[in-house]
Amino acid sequence: MDETTNAPRAVPRTACVFGASGGIGKALCEKLAALGCERIYAGSRRGAAPTGSAFTPFAFDLNDEVSIAAAAAMMKDDPPEWVIVASGVLTLADGTGPERTYKRLDPRVMAEVFALNTIGPALIAKHCLALMPRSRPFVFAALSARVGSISDNRLGGWHSYRASKAALNMLIRNFAIEMARTHPQGIVVGLHPGTVDSALSRPFQAGLAPGQLTAPELAAERLIGVLAGLSPEQSGRVFDWRGAEVPA
Image (cartoon, rainbow, N blue to C red; front, side):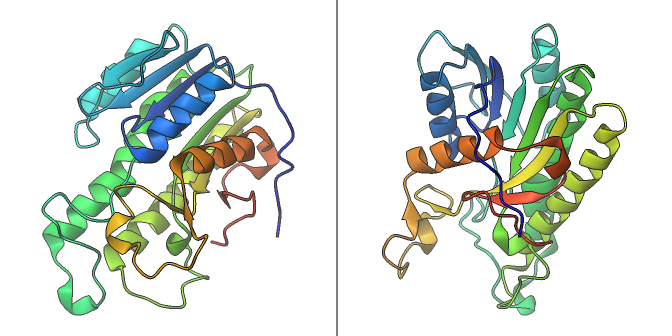
């Protein structure tokens, strides 16, 4: 099992967080600012962002490619060195949760979960990777999940969520291979943050073992440490909050 070194590489001068109003996304923004990142593009559906001179807020919708393209166009003159997609869904807005059996599969639900967990991040990659200069390092990272691992699946269930994250992991691998041909210093990875105390995990926190739930601020610190320690040779993989590779 490969592990990152967590070497203290310089914090990026510029970064972008898609999903900046969520628990992990907001914490990532605030931690990057505290570490000295000079400009942080902070995207959310309503254009909300943490307060401070480092933040440049923008609005986007994972279901609207035009809004994603507009966000990328806004950043083209000063593209971010790190792009982090900190969005995703486990329970839909109408309260529909993950399916525990194939008998509850619903094509409408599956389509919405894939739109938010797979297609939306892929469209962000489409428009943001195109901004990356060939002559310098960059990081593109998307929050994934250990349950997206096919070889590590022992319990089944959560069909749409698992499948959407597995598909995202495949796209991350595809993008990494393609970018390596022209951007040898680039890194494209997935991140498994663990079980974070956020709106996404809240309906499923009952019964968690002591210490299994992580505060967003600690999760953000750990994930930034993982990203700072990665090398281009590790591009295309998924890493957890400890820096350990998640099996495909």
